[in-house]
Length: 120
Image 1 (cartoon, rainbow, N blue to C red):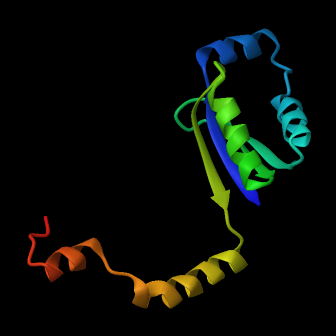
Image 2 (cartoon, one colour):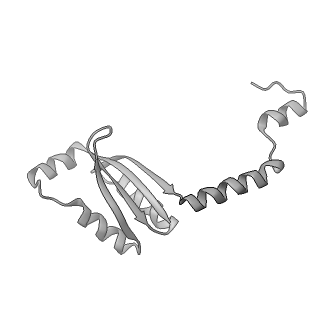
Image 3 (cartoon, helix red, strand yellow):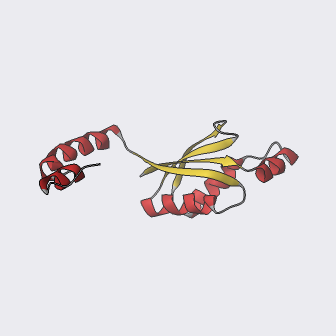
């Protein structure tokens, strides 16, 4: 499964990288992902909300969450967000499943309305 993990570097990390501007964080990320049994698909630098990185991983769901948690627990990255990425075939399957399940769903408002309770 593909995961996209975003994070911003902390001032501490930025200061460390300023001491060695040739530092390649991709090597460190690839080592971690490979050790977890996954594959690093891509890595990009970002400037949204401050300098950081976005990585796309092909990993097991548990591994994706574990890597995001590991990175978030460090002093070097903040504002970590992990997103599962879906292929267009998966998106189509999700849409079809949603339509299939729609008749079985009762919204919270409909449930309350059934008993004459205020919906607010």
